[in-house]
Amino acid sequence: MSVAEKIIFSGKSNALLAKRIAKVLDCKIGKATVKQFSDGETYVNIEEDIKDKNVYIVQSGSDPVDHHLMELLIMVHAAKHLQPHKLVAVIPFYPYRRMEKIVEPGESLTFQLVADLLHAAGVDKVICIDLHKHRSKRFFRFQRKELRAFPVIVNYFKQKALHNFVVVAPDKGSMPESKRYARELNVPLVKSFKTRKKHDQAIIKRLEGDVKNKNIIIVDDEINTAGTLVGVVEKLKQEGAQDVYFACTHPVLSGPAIERIQHESLKEIIVTDTIELPVNKQIAKIKILSVAELFATAIRDDR
Ligand code: R5P
Image (cartoon, rainbow, N blue to C red; front, side, top):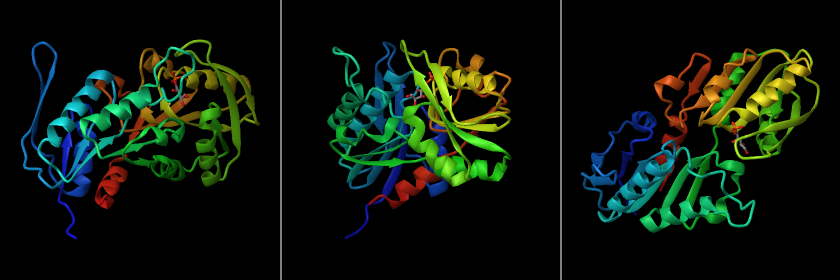
């Protein structure tokens, strides 16, 4: 059986990562017009022959989230009419990824809604990375490949060769991944316990483990308002910790985040390029690692 030819398209949210992926794969980004009508509606025209090809559309669900999601859906829908062999949504930052359970009656299971919308638009497969808590498989009515930024981030720390440090898991959800980091870096794991009284506000209740005079690596899946991070940093300082390094996959950095991460104890914030940071958020202490190689490999290996 012959293997279908592959072609990559990029939405507007993360053209930089799409370009990096295409560079690793040594291919060009397919031609498509993606623009707004004056009333704000989105217009898409896929200007390539994609019949019988495997099509990969790269789009992050970053801010403005709903607009970028709709753009992806319309690109998929437009492509579907051209009869590709397979349509793959490459979603480095999956929108509504934290809304994968109902906390109070009356809420929407928005994670599932997004999966259903992708299905309705015509997606055959999603390639994503570090979904929240990695337990959302049940929502997809199509194939899913979930990558992990772990190898990229852990290698960065190995090369940095820090001394006298521990890994801190900022909350319960991050513990399994933090444990992997601690094991791979061969250092102790310290646990932090977090509670939320309202949305976007984190309260750190206590730490479990010794941090006195230690340097710290905190690992999480994302940094949003930086409330969790700064809460943990404050607690760590009270308990005598030294320099703090923070690493996560998705740099959402909304609201007060940039101001909060100026905290003097925070030495470096290591993030990946799943979200394209606007210039005003590219501050000196943020180090961006690329996950392009991971996505390129997943596309290359996709059959
Ligand atoms: C929460 O469950 C996530 O894993 C992150 O800890 C959270 O999204 C970080 O949010 P923020 O930066 O607003 O505290």
